[in-house]
Image 1 (spheres, one colour):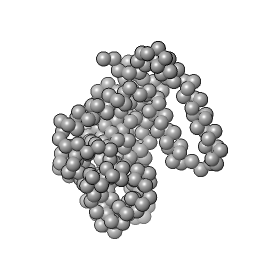
Image 2 (cartoon, rainbow, N blue to C red; image 1 turned 135 degrees about the horizontal axis):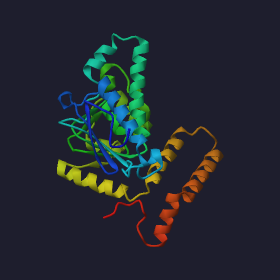
Image 3 (spheres, helix red, strand yellow; image 1 turned 90 degrees about the vertical axis):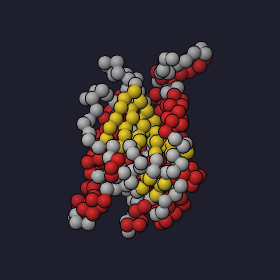
Image 4 (spheres, rainbow, N blue to C red; image 1 turned 120 degrees about the horizontal axis):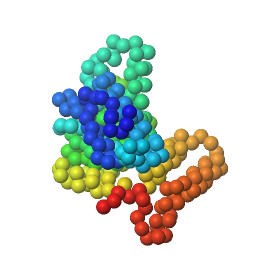
Length: 285
């Protein structure tokens, strides 16, 4: 399956613009609430985009000359970004066995982990509410642009459950104290609070202004080495998961640096700087 032939979906729509893939949650009548079908479709699309990314392939373009992906943008159609889990899915959970509920949780974890560890630079553009799993999607992205009206909540506690599956990703995003407080509080926070604790990066009002900000960010990311972007995420994931000694960590970072300096992209980047020219990965104007 090439980058020009994405997986079929009914609740997700997408568009491709060169090395940028835009994914839209398209269940607006249900406020883009996550049901099993939408979760499965998102997992398939995230995996497909990763397989056809520069980080996933090691190449800027495929054999047919199609650009591999460098940036993934996630948006929600309609009034709200994502209202969390679908009410029918939550209702059905009460009638399911422990094993069936475990399988549902594993599916959710695949969704969030595939976005958190995605080799592309991931950008969210959000509005309305981002509750429960919607807040989890926000936490998994590299940069989030929010409309001033946006409200975010780890709302699971209001239902007597916990934000456990999204927990590792939100925890890494906002830290221990903020995660603990928002998990217990379970109420909505506004964009001023979300910006203060690092849940989002920008607050911008209006679709036109948001598009300008998005275009500016995309242009900036495309000036960075494509493999460097993916490797930066790999480096960060390594730090997140590190269980070895401090000395082993230092040696790992030295190995990482040596590999990047010696690779084709590293050599091109340093040569272009010394020759006062643009590197070959930057889009031609």
